[in-house]
Image 1 (tube, rainbow, N blue to C red):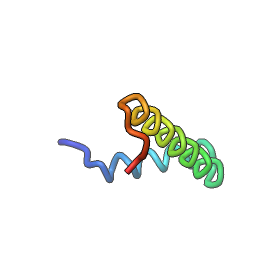
Image 2: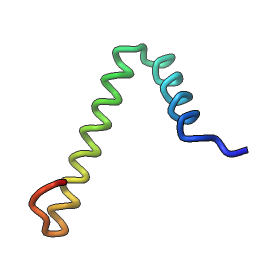
Image 3: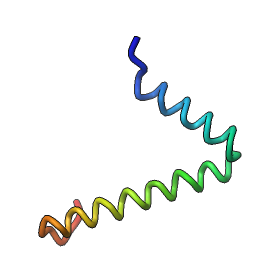
Image 4: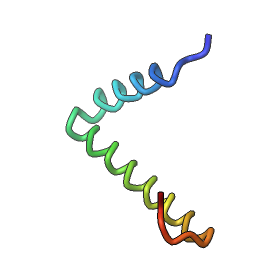
Length: 53
């Protein structure tokens, strides 16, 4: 049986909150989102695009 994206997200969130607590898990997710945004921005610059869309 294939695990759905929603099930994976829920399991991940449960694991994060169990390990870090609610506030720290939320901070961790925010940090990951920032890192992904920076990576996307760097990829756009590398490809010669000056704006993210």
